[in-house]
Image (cartoon, rainbow, N blue to C red; front, top):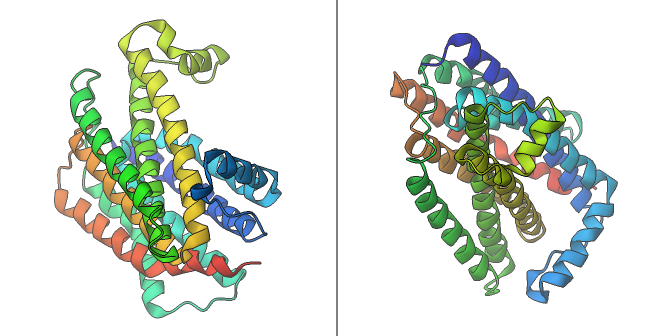
Length: 315
């Protein structure tokens, strides 16, 4: 079982990361509302990429991306300490940032049910802590088959959702399907993040030094298993994050933000948790407290996602 201090540090890092993610989300959404072109994949990849370059010129949107990327550093360290099963559900604590922002910026009134949700969300880390999570049981050879199978399944579902979104049934369903696709790719990115952090620990790579980052970026040329998975974990994390980002931005432009928020939060929560339990073999000494924590977070996602949706109206 992971000791209390390590768990506490993991919680603090997760809160910092989730706050960065949420603030980044607010700025991204505000940037999208500033007249950015629609990402219409029906017009071809080159046209979509050309439209995406306009996103890169928008200072508000770029600021959101940069703040979100800053959040990945404490997120990575948190995962290295306590694993994805523990960290990913707690990233939804960032919903509190949206509640505060909605009250301050949009003058949105908060109801009793939402106050209760915030209180429960604050208490969620307590249930995760007393659940007694184990260390990640990670073997670089044994994990490859379940990881590859899970990855193939998720990627297939994401690709199917993407292609069905191009059938143009109606804008709403197109947006929901492409958002599901983006959410799944986001989840794949978080799973690669866990692979990356665990491989780093095995290889004992020092990320404080420049040479450590050379090992990360060009790890495939070290010709050993741990560096190989550092390489795949790092680039898989970046590539699938980028795909998820582009698809989710397209979803924002086609469907109500409320649906986008619910899909992104819930898909990421459950897929990452499943991966942590069955691929990285994390267990709990008291699974009941863990399930209570998951229930609290699921309830909070449903009740508080509307505050993310409110930013659809920001001009």
